[in-house]
Length: 151
Image (cartoon, rainbow, N blue to C red; front, side, top):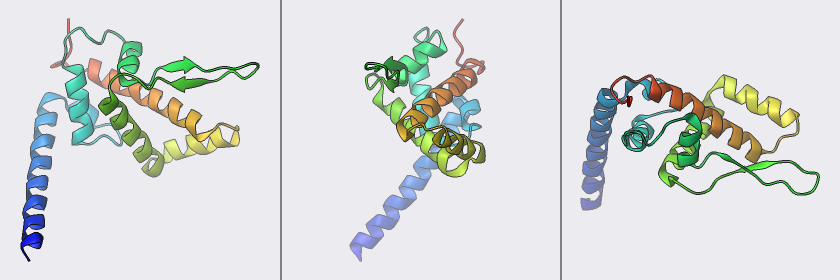
């Protein structure tokens, strides 16, 4: 009985924190929340990464910080790339969450994945390209936000 009351109380606290986080991220940076698959938590991670003025000068720098910049991993006649596993792991996890959400719920992303699988791409290669696309899209959203842009 006590455990059930505690769980109910913690669930209420979690919902209140989610509402407060959504309100704060909407005030700071409303544009990423408009992206498909981005919630309050992932938008808050973007705010935290983007908050250092002058740190991110280009989309490539943002990809490097997120750990989604491609690194050549070729061998012999095989030409391929892999993701950089370094840098900000929280941001990389947020981008992974967005990619998985889009693969599950977004029609255009599902069609893209099916088309790439038909071309013979592996799931890893598809995830790499999706993550890089998400970085490009989020960088555009972040640079167009007047409250966080750096002159």
